[in-house]
Figure (spheres, rainbow, N blue to C red):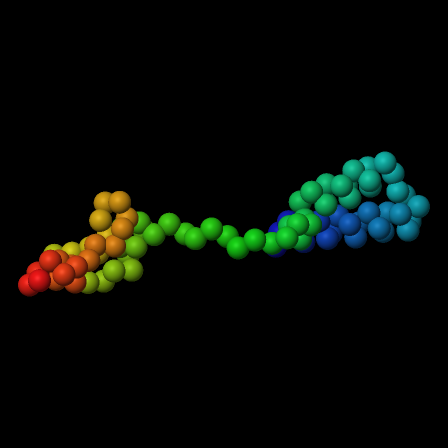
Length: 90
């Protein structure tokens, strides 16, 4: 938002400078700079997903980690309980 507002303000100032016949070579440079910082000059993209490691998620897990072990392995994959995988009682 800050970059978008700054680009908008720079363009408005350059326009006012032209209307006051005070336009100089720097207005062209300033408008190019405004275009380079304007986030709406290109298509907006969805930001990347935030990290979801044990370290990042532990503040949201309020359970007893001794009674209920962490469901993710060292590689970040979900660990199913042995009975859910079909190894117990098959």
